[in-house]
Image (cartoon, rainbow, N blue to C red):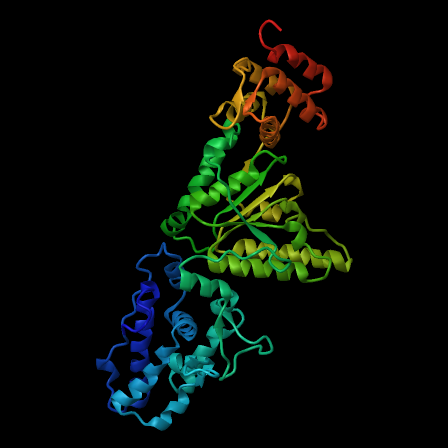
Length: 468
């Protein structure tokens, strides 16, 4: 079947198999001389390269589900494939009147045929009612093809009818045709954004205990599937991580880096857009995110998660509180049932419902950096090779003084570094003198409650050139 898009070898093989299967199904159903025992169903090998997005998607479905997916792909990329029915009828001398069972539809103002739901029923169940009844189960709301948002059909139809023209959803079609995962855009219906970082583990400077726990979490995300398999775990869920600590201590960067270690996209959930004042809307938004995430094998990152994972109220008759408890219960269910990984970050771990806490595999506390960690952070940002050239008078000893002078976070130090870059760029150079460093600390620090004036005044001597 060389006519089928030879420049797309990753789905060429599957379209070729579907054409062979059409011949098989036609003979099996309509040819009285056909001996099925001697004519095996064509062998279908997939996922030769499971690291490819195309194969990764198909391998997560059963053969019947894959037939549906590839058939709808053929509708959109190679409708000529459906001529295989006519060729089969001609080659095997089948009764032309039997073609009414095939469910094919003419595409308006084109010479092309299209497979309808009736065509899928024939491919998967022939013409036997008892076999077709099994096929209907593939299209129920809870079945994977629907639950994972693979299919689309007219919204007016709760279930497809015989002449319904089904389509692949946009993300699935994009992944199959381009061999790339389509990252959906943020919207009120999909309040999540892809979390990325250009930083490395060397940029995440934390205390020794937190660093040890992060190393263990990194092992979990890399090897959790193998651990599940080796321990014969019967749970579908993936790894669960709870990170607590003040803002600016590295929780979000850790989530992004762990996603890189797992080689999976991390989607950061906008809690403020999830929690809805209208009854039932929160669960609807969560359900959509979980469905899409499961289909794409994403890591979900709930930042400031106590707004969603908070404690349930007890004994309240308030309808709002009852619905809030229902939403928490729904989240508990998804925490158990979702097969992917979930990261939760919070500034207030005590606000998290204990039922959630028990379901996490790891719990990492991010502390406000102590003076030793702060000294590392000052040196990391200001001494590493980069844009800024510091006055030699700014020494490691003085970075230790800075670390002792103010209890600032890693994020604050990074922001101050960007402020210094701004000031240097504005004056047309990349160098900073000791006196300028003192001024910048005073300007940037005082307005944020750090490095009070008297302290900043002392830095004049610390950062001045010798002899000043």
